[in-house]
Length: 227
Image 1 (cartoon, rainbow, N blue to C red):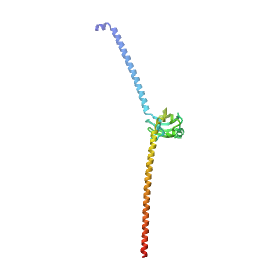
Image 2 (cartoon, rainbow, N blue to C red; image 1 turned 180 degrees about the vertical axis):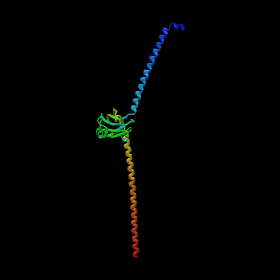
Image 3 (spheres, one colour; image 1 turned 60 degrees about the vertical axis):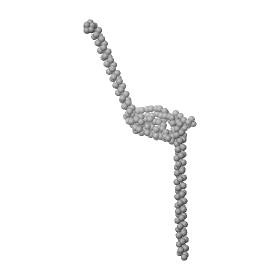
Image 4 (cartoon, rainbow, N blue to C red; image 1 turned 30 degrees about the horizontal axis):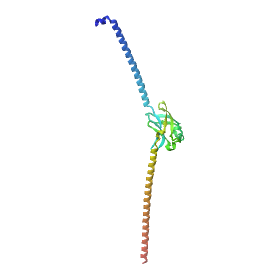
Protein backbone atom coordinates (compact mmCIF):
# COMPACT_ATOMS: atom_id res chain seq x y z
CA UNK A 1 0.00 0.00 0.00
CA UNK A 2 2.76 2.37 0.96
CA UNK A 3 4.61 1.41 -2.21
CA UNK A 4 1.49 2.26 -4.27
CA UNK A 5 1.17 5.63 -2.57
CA UNK A 6 4.85 6.29 -3.24
CA UNK A 7 4.52 5.26 -6.88
CA UNK A 8 1.36 7.38 -7.31
CA UNK A 9 2.26 10.34 -5.14
CA UNK A 10 1.24 12.81 -7.82
CA UNK A 11 -2.27 11.36 -7.91
CA UNK A 12 -2.50 11.37 -4.12
CA UNK A 13 -1.36 14.98 -3.96
CA UNK A 14 -3.93 15.92 -6.59
CA UNK A 15 -6.71 14.22 -4.62
CA UNK A 16 -5.58 15.97 -1.44
CA UNK A 17 -5.77 19.32 -3.23
CA UNK A 18 -9.25 18.50 -4.57
CA UNK A 19 -10.48 17.51 -1.11
CA UNK A 20 -9.00 20.65 0.45
CA UNK A 21 -10.61 22.83 -2.24
CA UNK A 22 -13.95 21.08 -1.75
CA UNK A 23 -13.81 21.49 2.01
CA UNK A 24 -12.83 25.14 1.60
CA UNK A 25 -15.75 25.78 -0.77
CA UNK A 26 -18.10 23.95 1.57
CA UNK A 27 -16.85 25.97 4.53
CA UNK A 28 -17.27 29.23 2.61
CA UNK A 29 -20.79 28.20 1.56
CA UNK A 30 -21.77 27.39 5.14
CA UNK A 31 -20.24 30.62 6.41
CA UNK A 32 -22.01 32.68 3.75
CA UNK A 33 -25.38 31.07 4.39
CA UNK A 34 -24.88 31.34 8.12
CA UNK A 35 -24.26 35.08 7.77
CA UNK A 36 -27.24 35.39 5.44
CA UNK A 37 -29.44 33.50 7.89
CA UNK A 38 -28.16 35.61 10.79
CA UNK A 39 -28.82 38.82 8.86
CA UNK A 40 -32.30 37.59 7.93
CA UNK A 41 -32.97 36.63 11.54
CA UNK A 42 -31.81 40.05 12.71
CA UNK A 43 -34.06 41.76 10.17
CA UNK A 44 -36.97 39.52 11.15
CA UNK A 45 -36.41 40.18 14.84
CA UNK A 46 -36.16 43.93 14.19
CA UNK A 47 -39.40 43.85 12.18
CA UNK A 48 -41.16 41.91 14.95
CA UNK A 49 -39.76 44.32 17.55
CA UNK A 50 -41.06 47.31 15.58
CA UNK A 51 -44.45 45.70 15.07
CA UNK A 52 -44.70 44.86 18.75
CA UNK A 53 -43.89 48.44 19.68
CA UNK A 54 -46.17 50.24 17.26
CA UNK A 55 -49.74 51.46 17.68
CA UNK A 56 -52.42 49.30 16.10
CA UNK A 57 -55.55 51.30 15.29
CA UNK A 58 -58.71 49.44 14.31
CA UNK A 59 -62.21 50.68 13.51
CA UNK A 60 -65.30 48.53 13.74
CA UNK A 61 -69.07 48.54 14.17
CA UNK A 62 -70.28 47.15 17.48
CA UNK A 63 -73.68 46.46 18.99
CA UNK A 64 -75.23 46.03 22.41
CA UNK A 65 -77.90 43.73 23.80
CA UNK A 66 -80.50 46.35 22.93
CA UNK A 67 -79.37 46.34 19.28
CA UNK A 68 -78.03 49.85 19.08
CA UNK A 69 -75.16 50.17 16.61
CA UNK A 70 -72.04 52.16 17.43
CA UNK A 71 -68.78 52.97 15.63
CA UNK A 72 -65.67 52.27 17.69
CA UNK A 73 -62.06 53.30 17.25
CA UNK A 74 -59.53 51.37 19.35
CA UNK A 75 -55.78 51.26 19.83
CA UNK A 76 -54.97 47.60 20.46
CA UNK A 77 -51.22 48.18 20.18
CA UNK A 78 -48.79 48.82 23.03
CA UNK A 79 -47.76 52.28 21.88
CA UNK A 80 -49.71 55.51 21.50
CA UNK A 81 -51.03 56.81 18.18
CA UNK A 82 -51.53 60.41 17.12
CA UNK A 83 -52.99 62.48 14.27
CA UNK A 84 -55.56 59.82 13.43
CA UNK A 85 -57.71 60.51 10.37
CA UNK A 86 -60.81 58.47 9.58
CA UNK A 87 -62.61 58.26 6.28
CA UNK A 88 -65.81 56.27 5.79
CA UNK A 89 -67.01 55.55 2.27
CA UNK A 90 -70.60 54.21 2.31
CA UNK A 91 -71.07 51.05 0.26
CA UNK A 92 -74.87 50.99 0.56
CA UNK A 93 -77.65 53.49 1.15
CA UNK A 94 -78.51 53.76 4.84
CA UNK A 95 -79.38 56.53 7.28
CA UNK A 96 -76.08 56.71 9.14
CA UNK A 97 -74.19 59.27 7.07
CA UNK A 98 -75.55 62.40 8.76
CA UNK A 99 -75.29 60.85 12.23
CA UNK A 100 -71.62 59.95 11.86
CA UNK A 101 -70.73 63.22 10.17
CA UNK A 102 -71.68 65.03 13.37
CA UNK A 103 -69.16 63.05 15.44
CA UNK A 104 -66.02 65.04 16.27
CA UNK A 105 -63.65 62.17 15.44
CA UNK A 106 -64.83 62.19 11.81
CA UNK A 107 -64.82 65.95 11.35
CA UNK A 108 -61.55 66.77 13.10
CA UNK A 109 -59.82 63.42 13.58
CA UNK A 110 -58.29 62.15 16.82
CA UNK A 111 -55.21 63.94 18.14
CA UNK A 112 -54.05 61.16 20.47
CA UNK A 113 -55.15 57.64 21.35
CA UNK A 114 -53.43 55.79 24.18
CA UNK A 115 -52.90 52.01 24.20
CA UNK A 116 -56.12 50.11 25.02
CA UNK A 117 -58.14 53.31 24.67
CA UNK A 118 -61.43 53.19 22.72
CA UNK A 119 -63.60 55.99 21.37
CA UNK A 120 -67.23 55.37 20.49
CA UNK A 121 -69.80 57.19 18.35
CA UNK A 122 -73.48 56.30 18.50
CA UNK A 123 -74.94 55.34 15.11
CA UNK A 124 -78.52 54.26 15.85
CA UNK A 125 -80.76 51.24 16.27
CA UNK A 126 -80.94 48.48 13.69
CA UNK A 127 -84.61 49.21 13.10
CA UNK A 128 -84.02 52.81 12.04
CA UNK A 129 -80.82 52.01 10.12
CA UNK A 130 -82.22 49.23 7.95
CA UNK A 131 -82.85 50.37 4.37
CA UNK A 132 -85.60 49.31 1.96
CA UNK A 133 -83.59 46.22 0.99
CA UNK A 134 -83.33 45.24 4.67
CA UNK A 135 -79.58 45.90 4.60
CA UNK A 136 -77.57 47.47 7.39
CA UNK A 137 -74.69 49.97 7.03
CA UNK A 138 -71.56 48.84 5.18
CA UNK A 139 -68.46 51.05 4.83
CA UNK A 140 -64.99 51.04 3.42
CA UNK A 141 -62.97 52.56 6.24
CA UNK A 142 -59.56 54.18 5.71
CA UNK A 143 -57.31 54.96 8.65
CA UNK A 144 -54.18 57.09 8.62
CA UNK A 145 -52.13 57.75 11.75
CA UNK A 146 -48.66 58.20 13.21
CA UNK A 147 -46.72 56.82 16.13
CA UNK A 148 -44.82 59.05 18.54
CA UNK A 149 -41.69 58.72 16.34
CA UNK A 150 -43.50 60.24 13.34
CA UNK A 151 -43.76 56.93 11.46
CA UNK A 152 -46.84 56.83 9.22
CA UNK A 153 -49.37 53.99 8.97
CA UNK A 154 -52.27 53.47 6.58
CA UNK A 155 -54.86 50.74 6.30
CA UNK A 156 -58.12 50.25 4.43
CA UNK A 157 -60.76 47.56 4.82
CA UNK A 158 -64.52 46.97 4.85
CA UNK A 159 -66.71 47.03 7.96
CA UNK A 160 -70.16 45.51 7.53
CA UNK A 161 -72.85 45.59 10.21
CA UNK A 162 -74.88 43.02 8.26
CA UNK A 163 -72.93 40.41 10.22
CA UNK A 164 -75.32 41.28 13.06
CA UNK A 165 -78.33 40.49 10.87
CA UNK A 166 -80.58 38.10 12.75
CA UNK A 167 -80.35 39.90 16.07
CA UNK A 168 -84.04 40.72 15.81
CA UNK A 169 -84.76 37.73 18.03
CA UNK A 170 -82.63 39.31 20.73
CA UNK A 171 -84.23 42.67 20.10
CA UNK A 172 -87.73 41.21 20.31
CA UNK A 173 -86.75 39.34 23.43
CA UNK A 174 -85.39 42.53 24.95
CA UNK A 175 -88.57 44.41 24.07
CA UNK A 176 -90.59 41.58 25.58
CA UNK A 177 -88.43 41.69 28.71
CA UNK A 178 -88.83 45.46 28.79
CA UNK A 179 -92.61 45.08 28.60
CA UNK A 180 -92.47 42.55 31.43
CA UNK A 181 -90.42 44.96 33.52
CA UNK A 182 -92.85 47.77 32.74
CA UNK A 183 -95.74 45.55 33.81
CA UNK A 184 -93.89 44.74 37.03
CA UNK A 185 -93.33 48.43 37.67
CA UNK A 186 -96.98 49.12 36.89
CA UNK A 187 -98.00 46.36 39.31
CA UNK A 188 -95.77 47.78 42.05
CA UNK A 189 -97.18 51.25 41.37
CA UNK A 190 -100.76 49.98 41.64
CA UNK A 191 -99.94 48.19 44.89
CA UNK A 192 -98.35 51.36 46.24
CA UNK A 193 -101.38 53.43 45.24
CA UNK A 194 -103.70 50.88 46.82
CA UNK A 195 -101.70 50.87 50.05
CA UNK A 196 -101.76 54.68 50.11
CA UNK A 197 -105.52 54.67 49.50
CA UNK A 198 -106.04 52.20 52.37
CA UNK A 199 -103.80 54.30 54.64
CA UNK A 200 -105.63 57.46 53.60
CA UNK A 201 -108.97 55.78 54.32
CA UNK A 202 -107.75 54.66 57.74
CA UNK A 203 -106.47 58.15 58.48
CA UNK A 204 -109.82 59.64 57.50
CA UNK A 205 -111.61 57.09 59.72
CA UNK A 206 -109.23 57.88 62.56
CA UNK A 207 -109.72 61.64 62.33
CA UNK A 208 -113.43 61.13 61.88
CA UNK A 209 -113.56 59.07 65.07
CA UNK A 210 -111.52 61.68 66.94
CA UNK A 211 -113.83 64.43 65.72
CA UNK A 212 -116.88 62.38 66.73
CA UNK A 213 -115.36 61.67 70.14
CA UNK A 214 -114.63 65.35 70.73
CA UNK A 215 -118.17 66.21 69.67
CA UNK A 216 -119.58 63.67 72.10
CA UNK A 217 -117.40 65.03 74.89
CA UNK A 218 -118.65 68.56 74.25
CA UNK A 219 -122.25 67.32 74.22
CA UNK A 220 -121.77 65.52 77.54
CA UNK A 221 -120.18 68.61 79.07
CA UNK A 222 -123.08 70.76 77.96
CA UNK A 223 -125.53 68.33 79.51
CA UNK A 224 -123.56 68.28 82.75
CA UNK A 225 -123.28 72.06 82.77
CA UNK A 226 -127.02 72.38 82.13
CA UNK A 227 -127.77 70.30 85.16
